[in-house]
Amino acid sequence: MTTAPPFASPHYIAVEGPIRVGKSTLAQIISDRLHARLIADRTDNPHLAAFYSGELGAAFRAQLHFLLTRYLQLRDLALEHDPRTVVCDYLFEKDRIFAALNLSDAELKIYQQYFELFRPQLPAPDLVIYLQATPAVLRKRLRRTAAGVAGERSLSDDYLEAVAAAYDHFFFHYNVSNLLVINTSEIDFVERPGDLQALLRRLGEPVKGTQYFLPLGPV
Image (cartoon, rainbow, N blue to C red; front, side, top):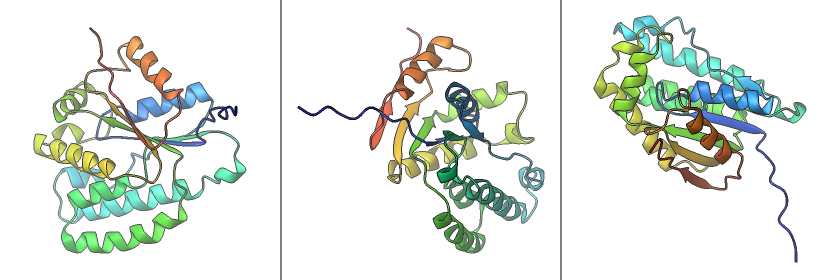
């Protein structure tokens, strides 16, 4: 009788989800626990303030800045030369989610040419962790967050709903990496230690294909 090979933890993990779902916090926690290299998304985009204020053309400038910055970060991972686990608090494809929401058809056509040039040059994660939450929960977390990108609190409910729906649609069709979908609407791994421990226990188990973790939260 043959025995199954031991579980090997993924070498490259990406944490994703809509605005203020907790992806950066979870990525930091995972990287601390695994003594991993953390790749954090840049938030110093000089075009964001103009985008939030509705300046004409600012969305296109902001999106191209994000695309290039994220490409340069991930291009230099050099996974084959670094034995450490890598944890990234974004997936490169997330850039296209926001581009589709924020750009005009003409702008999106230009953007897409750059995206298709960059994407094949980047490694794919071994595991993607997708954090879900309802738009109402996202709004609540947005309001309680004192720090963050200037202008986020002014985002409309319609925009938050569109972002959450776009993420759900994207990950419903995602099959590039192993995928763990975690619904965080009823849990708070920042404020409740029990929720965090349950989540970390699940992350210590293997993920094959697409799997779901639906914690119930406090009872």
